[in-house]
Image (cartoon, rainbow over all chains, first blue to last red):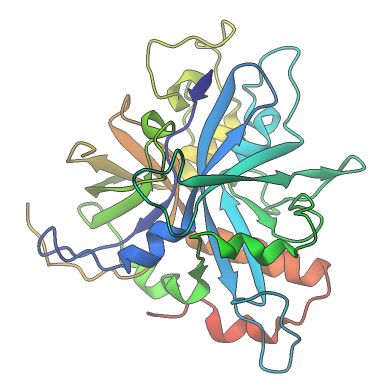
Length: 267
Length: 59
């Protein structure tokens, strides 16, 4: 049974929307870069989302990928390190691997499925293969896609994942600090992600939300673990009333400073 | 809605909080992601000359 414990993800792109047709991102490329992530380490499998990020090889550097020099899977740290989140149910441990669901190419409606699962190893000999920020309060995890993290795929190199209908966001999509610093309460934003309720669909379907930044909080505020779950009524091993440690709270409200109201429903 | 008064462009962050069951989302600034990427390149001794030209590049 899949339990979508985290919805969202992703990207928040930015903004200045004059109308719904003016999404200032390359929607086709973005759809290929967003993936579902499955943690099946427990019977109560979890679903999360992530996106693929590509870094072009330097002019004189040997190419390590078909399109990019390097590629990374980016997601929230609490997806790969729920222990850090402070909300890991008793008796459970962090996942040692997750599965990344990619859309396949040349899909036809009559096909039984339009996706492929690729295993991403999170540990090797007990050593984490993913990276987090030096600031322990930042909820970001970056997983280099290499032959170590991508489980053996027959006789092919890890970058065969791009044989699927997958792509990667370029670092050039990142907003400059100058642009970021112009964000304020009321700024329009667009988020792009996958809807966990649709995780059984035959394909990954990227969905956008449109909203505005509603506040920028200057202080850390404790929030309950259950706050991260999709269904407010859901209780996980009695931890729904558990209070997150302050570091996480800081991540939510001090380091994640921007909060955006969803002004439109998922559609 | 008053639209078009700001001109934010580009990927500004990672949504690490938020769901249909809640009414807002939290955003992790994208600069933190870039800093982790820099850390990975440094630790693995990968050539970093590809990075500067893409650092926070404006689309």
